[in-house]
Image (cartoon, rainbow, N blue to C red; front, side):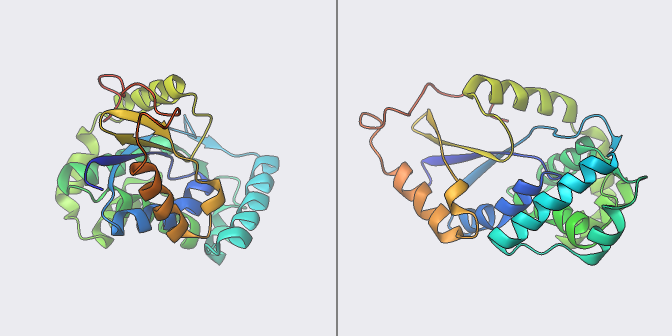
Length: 227
């Protein structure tokens, strides 16, 4: 599938992106080329009100039932119930960009590391020190990562992702686009939650479909949007 590219529109602090983590991991293991687009669900940093945190808990429970993804006690009984906890996407997306600038194709692993720190360990992933440790967990040198974290063009990246979402009518996170021979189609994934092999099969099927027969294929990504 070297001629196909999976564009993954994500946010590390989106519960449904955590639900999709096994799908992305399976795609990477199958050799799919993945390009990441961080969209910024939580901007700027906010203290989520009690009603919002209650809604998040309900969604997390649904994700756990549907996918088997684990949520740790430190998250459920600590971070999530703490009114001083900050939800802010920008630092986590910057961490993914920094990791990718140092190690090619490690973006999905960095997203997973951030999600593990957040959803399992209940750590404040808006803090640089936590992100440095998450990067170290996937083998990235802490000193180099710290420098890269301050240098990556995260705001430009988020704005480009939002233009991409608007251009293709993507309503939220996660979203997937499959690019083949310079043309792009949205890749439905909702039916694949909890079934990573089905997601890989869906990519393989879509990648093997003739663009002349697939009416969903659209024009190529605009210049600057495929980051």
